[in-house]
Image 1 (tube, one colour):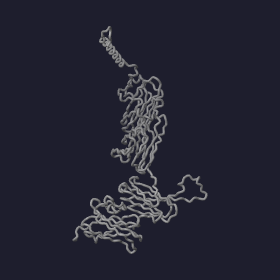
Image 2 (cartoon, one colour):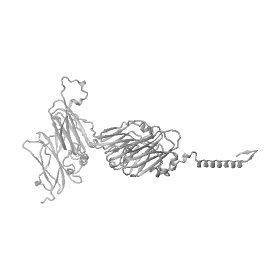
Image 3 (tube, rainbow, N blue to C red):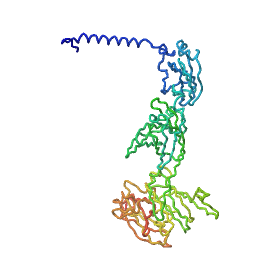
Image 4 (cartoon, rainbow, N blue to C red):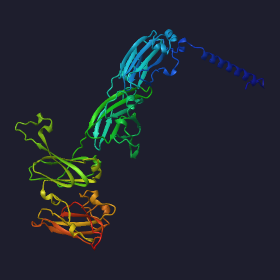
Length: 582
């Protein structure tokens, strides 16, 4: 609003301002339609704008077999500068050519003529399946053409064009990713690497894991495997059981599972510098290819590569004389080592391995110390391993319980492992014991034959007669016979007759056999007595009474050492007669 001599005269002035604004817009529209320079109207003879290369932006090009594909770039800068193009074949060999054409020639040519004739300067060409960079050190105004042909069927290629001096920065500075592969317990593999020196705050990382080979291009790995993106705090990736996508959170850790397709998987972790893989398979070779990705330009380079044959050997658990160790084999990936030192001369060294639920493989190795020569000088020998010799002893499959005795002193290494996945799932726990003093051995001596025999001729509708071989020592031991009726669970079949679980864990009735969850009920018979083995007695017989006709029972005989522990004979499955009148 404008005031003149006290009167309002705003409307004529507003009309003038609007008219001037319309004239300005019309002039700007005219400027847009008139080219500033003729070079800006150059189309390089190609009408397809989608086949124009963009500077400082990696693009992926799909190629059909033996089909010629042409991409172009229009250079409008008048001052001298560097122009380079990087060709990254994804998997197969391609034929490429990088050509230059001046403005005048470009206006008269088209895409078809480019492949047949025309006056063009060849800057570089080749046939490769590896990354190549070709550079025009003094780029001129005009059109640059990239001609691509696949030589091995359908393929992909990444192309990156830049006007930076010397080409892409990622290729001008040598870098060491310092890719470290560190095997850990529980079938884990920790992977770490250093931060990229080029644009470190804007670089993300993807690592390719393969059982077959290393990859030179990330796009080549994408053709063979699936991509797993993860940007959490801690990455735990199950590499061998990637079937279902499942995220589990426990505190600050996160677990991820996904199917590993065709033995190859790509794991992208953003800007993180570490990754932990789980469920690694022993004696399996894994190849790792680490790629660094510029988040602004999408330019992807191979940052580091390595491989490993996974064979992690955990640190042995020290055994103390007369002290037992109970181990959950599942928590140790189905394999655990124990060590026991007995360098002084002793009469006998005793071990036992007790397994609850399944079977394990027990293997002993003895390391002997060499005698020091009179002229031996500790400063001349830096490796202590040169003072020792290792001897592998017996390897035995243990079902339930096994005792091992040795006489030679040394450093004993005991390896306890599950023979297969099925046995590892069966084993509830493993108990290991070692001593150099025979009087400290807590378990009773048992015969080699641990089977319980049934006298079928004496089978009745309400009774079963059994027999077993007593322990060979002339000592007083406590024998117990416990009978359980088979309803839902048949322990003799479930534990394959060998059962040494929870024998010394007391329940509410004072019984010491069968798992605790079955201890409060379903015991139909139990009788214990102390007995001293006599030389003339080779078999102990016992009749079980007060049973029901036509019922199935599991029978267990245990022997308890005085002031010691308990062991069990093999379980016996028996069925009473259906009728008492037969």
